[in-house]
Length: 287
View 1 (cartoon, helix red, strand yellow):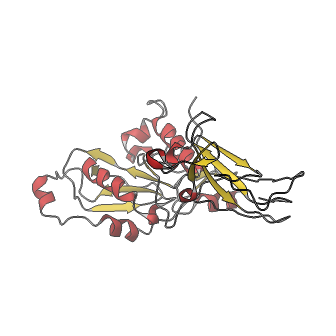
View 2: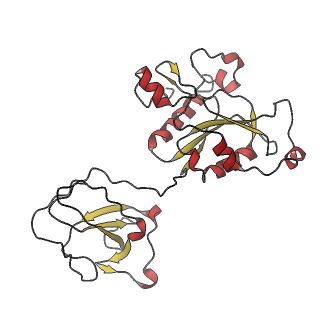
């Protein structure tokens, strides 16, 4: 932000639609004529009602998940009767380029989206659909099922939310702790138990290495080989964080076809730049 003339702004957050209730107030200083990035931690906001600090049982801390509105104000007064020592009467301006939230490091996924393997394969150049899973061969007959799933993935990737997209292969009701294979580029086929996928999803929420990635996962157990509780009991508990970190996941890899080029295990943006395609190239939803 580029301030001029005045200092000590109030930042007021409200947690409901009312304008005469408790607001949460913090402050920041500015420098004349300089663009600045100002960080205002949520922990610095105090509950205030009509310019008085709220104390006692009503003095609840700010819950950032409930923020309804934001106000930036220059005032002669601070709170509890204090005067703003930097205030001067007269015109002022405060251009603001953006207001965003920021996350403490290391950033972990705020959203884990379970999609499915095969979403980029319909109409991929050179693909042999006869050896692909039924959903790929029947995508059009199923109303563009995989195409819609890919469009959903794109919406998440373009949102800016720290997220990870998981594409499991065919889901089964078998026991967990199957030996697993993680890959990128959307080429693998196979099966995986729902139990393993559910554990993976929970583990990903604590995995900084997964932020911004899209990957496929399957077991190495063939479809023809059943996997039961006795098999699972012979396997040690899985260290999911080591499994995720050891997969060497590369952010931005989607396996999509961009500008007529299959991106494979390369970041989509890199392939788009080479192909001269507009980035990001979102999947076209079926009509």
